[in-house]
Length: 77
Image 1 (tube, rainbow, N blue to C red):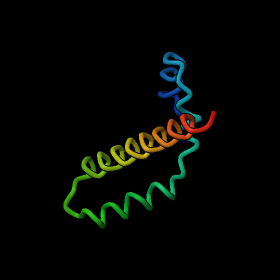
Image 2: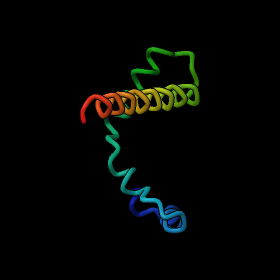
Image 3: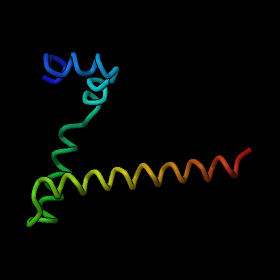
């Protein structure tokens, strides 16, 4: 569906973004399962608040991985 989007194709070409490749790598089932888990854990939050949580968790994970890689690079010659 995303690969055939006539709206996204000109945008990705203009911005030189490989958006379609990124989107194709998303595990939809895993993402839906995680969203359902968060909705159960935080039933009073709006979809916007749930998505904000997902973004913050992804940023934290990315930051943590980068710190570990920098630490390993500092230790190993």
